[in-house]
Length: 151
Image (cartoon, rainbow, N blue to C red):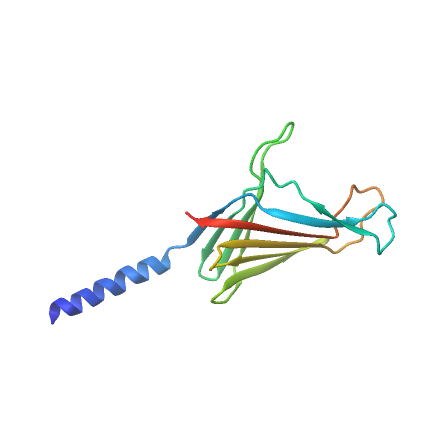
């Protein structure tokens, strides 16, 4: 009997230790498109454009209700260094299927969502402010999807 109790206690201790460890994922190059104003510049004239995301390698860390996403250029390009940004969401919304959080600043809103079953990271970006006339093709909306694997 004592042996059974000892086994149960050992199982509980190892399970709680495993649960306490954060889950870490590295992701493949995302796929995605963005919507930009068309050549006429009229409100209804928009076009979907494939984004070049070859240098982007996102990563995800999930630790309880904390959700961290690293996104950016991980490979230095000609004349520019690598530029990675890590967003840490301390109160992300977590369900059995996914964890997601939003980030909003003065010009942009972003939603990051990680799906546990498919190990996929989804990012939706929306422009809040009207583009300035001198800005280069500022996207109205961009959507990206990356397949991830556990580290």
